[in-house]
Image 1 (cartoon, rainbow, N blue to C red):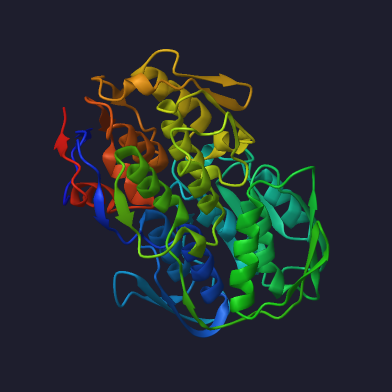
Image 2: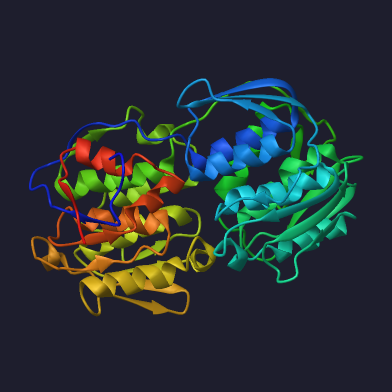
Length: 421
């Protein structure tokens, strides 16, 4: 759809959705690859990449620091760099892109000079202080008055030396940010985890795989510590796999309509943590009574809307990190599910309980779903519109953050969409 209306009504298609869809490239891997290519000496070709609001913001920030980035087609970046970032002329404005903000907060310490990392108002509510504490332990001057962006980093061109500790419980992105900058240490740097847990550890594995592809030497010294040698990075050609978080919406649309949607790659081909959601989606309408979302956080909204139509209630645990995403997703999910039917969901501490009601299928509910400027709330609640009449998604354009073609994809599969007032 060329220009999206301020609200979009989903019409249940009344038939199985069938067709072939190519999911967008992984946002998580694209932003990692863009940064690593910018820190590598030479020219890197990134294929299968995602072009969305978040990755466009990352590329713009890197260009502002002297990196040449060409875009020969809709899914490729060609990145040419000296391997060093230059001081930008002004603040790096990153919207509400949490991945880019956290990764760049560590990476700009490699700039010899002062860099401000900032974003829109919603980004200024997302915590980053644990990462700043870790950077300061390496001798890097990194500060934020409120513990959230804007962040001011005054770098010396080096990432220091020795050991840095980080509590990864709030966000694995802190860990990934430190790891990706660590090859520019004065000597080997040990990145060590503190705390009982790490959120979405699989994303750290993605980071290390990408680092190694660009020539980094990373090893485990124990189960909570990685040693990163001072190798820098070398340019390489790198292919980015499709986005598993985006795939969850299509897998869910398939089971909700008893359809057959070919994504071009089997579920087993995804290395991203959110692909684990496929195992649960395939069990619908008999999802297990408890689902631990700690290692597939971005897939929780998809699973939560499925749970609304499940045969029995579902409790989601291990999802406290969802409170510090683009919005408080636990609260947003509960609020919007209850807009469809009072009592359909509730918060219990940091758990989300969805009181399944399969009888909602086929009914009419004139609910207007608030999306909180959060792409995942918009895309997940649209799935309920495949089975429930009358659902309207507000601010549908917010899907541009990671899946700009989402509404076109649904329409192409035969889902009627109409502007709503």
